[in-house]
Image 1: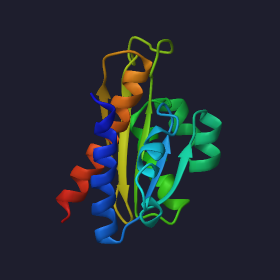
Image 2: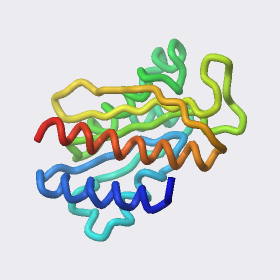
Image 3: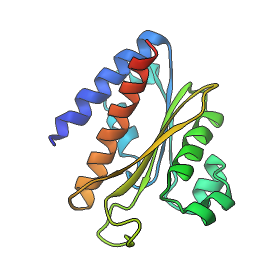
Length: 165
């Protein structure tokens, strides 16, 4: 996937959010701020991007986003449950009306039989709605998994915004 894909998606997302008067918050783990970097590369993004949380450690997920320790111990940091709590926490701790969260195993180490390298959980949330989450498996090396995760996060948000138009 071309690097331009992220730019195109970020621009499209910005147009949609600005038109609807919505702001975005991101909660990222395995992407390390890549989603926030992509959206802030769009000129004028301050009109629709509020803030980004990079919560790589479990402690950061708990402290900055309010992910419950029980969720992390029961399901793990790479889980739909953790991603949903990350997305909800980003909304609760920002001035945004929409959020996206991503947590996963980018590799090359850290994978397990149940959660191999390339396993990524994504979640999207809107004010006054329950977060929606999915698990995806991406092939490739670390940077490829991170890039594909950021693309999937933005595509998923665009799709969810289209559903409500």
